[in-house]
Image (cartoon, rainbow, N blue to C red; front, side, top):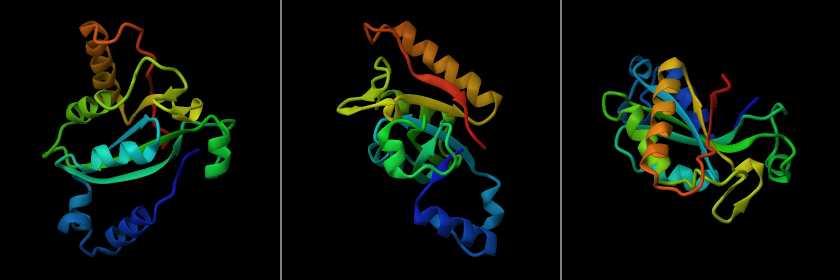
Length: 167
């Protein structure tokens, strides 16, 4: 149900599967130490840039998730009828950066009060969402959303979705 289209991810998976040295000097033995996070916050290239600068983030891959159509094209997602959202899938080292820190970065780079848009990007493919990988991420995401709601930073209600990541 998702399409991650980036040559870097293909190369990384081939390199790690072959046991060669991957990004940042990591080997396939280290790959088990990495965790995943998936966020949607408007244009995936904008979100990609934000997370690439975070210490402990190993890779950030743009793609689509959360929709009804298997393997959608950019044109299909852009038309808004697939149900997918533009998202980034992040591999990170939890020994260097916590999931809570990634959530902080996410909340500081989205407008969580607008449905089906982020800033100048309009359409349901630009909705904000946290796609959790497991119960712990779900719990942390919900707690962070509650904190954002309690701080009353925004006048409007928070509409960011918290949903399971497609595996």
